[in-house]
Image 1 (cartoon, helix red, strand yellow):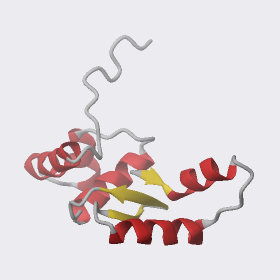
Image 2: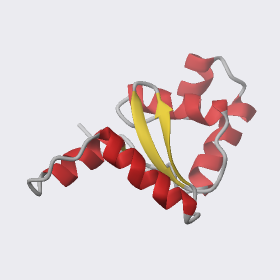
Image 3: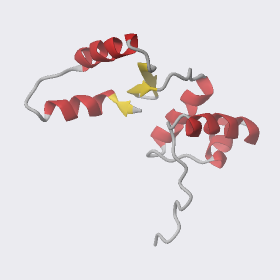
Image 4: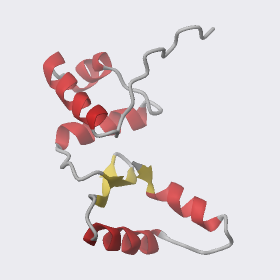
Amino acid sequence: IMAVSEVIDTLNRKNKLYNRGDIAIAVKKLHTLGGGFRIVKVGKSEMIISVPTELDQDHMEIMTLAQDGEGCVTVDDVKQQLKWTEDRAERAIALLLQEGMAWKDEFHGIGVS
């Protein structure tokens, strides 16, 4: 997953002038080759996703929650903020982990003062 704005910023460092439309065309061309490339709206941002798995509303809500939480979300966050059961939160997060769209941080906050 990568933000469209991040792709534009990276490409424009090479003294080129790319915009959102250029990125959309490129992603559309990649999509025809397979591999699941597409642009999706996540919260306030547009993200390029490159996995063939279809994401449902639960996955989008977790990614939005993570975006609002500076990239970090826990099962407890999902349960409290989205009012979900633990099972629902764990299933949705498990798919994101399985597809490499999220990473599990075993040591978050340990040793931080």
